[in-house]
Image (cartoon, rainbow, N blue to C red):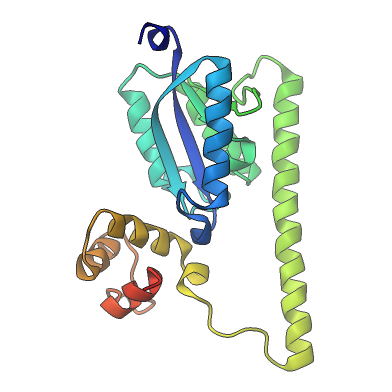
Length: 222
């Protein structure tokens, strides 16, 4: 216990963009946890709390992320000044979202450190700032290229067959809703209560109604 008291306290932030990758048994979350845990142990950090945004895209505004909001509340409580992430792309793939989020944490006196030891909040070294921004720009570019590639593939298939794809699954159409539904199920809520909670947080059908129990069941893969 004496050894832990000498370690620097930190919190960890994880993000997965696809609801299909939500869960401790999934590669994205497991990979992030492993990388951060390994770095924390080697670098002398004692992680006191996890914060996680499942099914949140890298381009989503920082202020709209419940996990990040909880992280800010934890920071307001004092005692922790370090946030550990796997890499900058996990913090945010969109360059603007990345810089805004880092700017918020810098103003709060926080450090954001990646699993390979890069301090994303170090603004004293202009070269480090430039490298971070370049990496963010390339990450954003790579995402745009992937989206364009998928669009071309869909258009080619539509031209060849006259049909591209069937109705999208709930996980594809509304990943944030599915991720929240799974989280609520893990807390023991019934389908009806899950539907009500989703609606209270703005997750409703296209016509503005609550999701039916059968829809909740499909979201959960039942």
